[in-house]
Length: 257
Length: 98
Image (cartoon, rainbow over all chains, first blue to last red):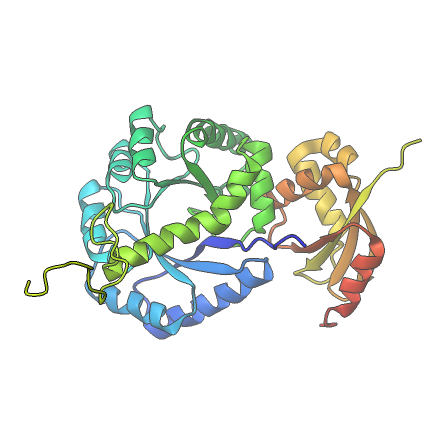
């Protein structure tokens, strides 16, 4: 019997970092139940922010401890690169995923080059075009390009066709070289989409490969989260080095040292 | 003549007094027009509480799913897709009434 694929909701939210912890947990639980009814097995709580304050750290840790989401993602929606860097400094160690919304050319360049950014989010019709140079950097750091389709459903038909064309251009360019994910990121109001519908949307409207999209929305994103957790816990201290067992002695090693 | 193979969508309605097949047809029409409707031909075959079974042409399943990602995503949820109406009915009957 074929194994059932377990899908991951990439963008459960957006949740607010400024609300009290109790309200955030309540909202998170409600979103989680909704996502489960749409057929998701794992959900990533998404927090959008334009600025970073120290108090946000307690809230993120509280959500992670409570377990109302399988992972925590910080979506940087800053309009300037300086603000984005400040948020990354604070949020990187606390979040399992960091996504940067590329709304200006400067932010797209930063998101594709900075190794702390896992997901580069593009909003069709708003984001600037993706260049070949950016693609090379995203490919080198094993990053993910995400296309937010949340806004497409609420737009008028004449604007929709233009936004779909922008999404198509982006998917064709990025899909050749890196993994492309589709989520509702950047939508005006939250409503999860059935994961299989998202895959079919990507295959029919954006000409992405079905199997790679399925892989992206299930196992691939969990691998990125796992890698980030290992980085945060020190199992991967630097890129390319992995500490397998801390206590074992190295055979033939210098005892005195 | 070749028999048309169909798939049966077990659909959960998120609002009362709506027809899942009509909503599906509307969203397919909005996304793909008459061509999409002719490829899918959605028909309601069974209703029980908030669940409904909609039968569509097998080749049109990707079209129906893609249309649902753009329209009506907050009105109906596709719970399961089966190959026989008997299996779909069994799933709907096993669901809690409310």
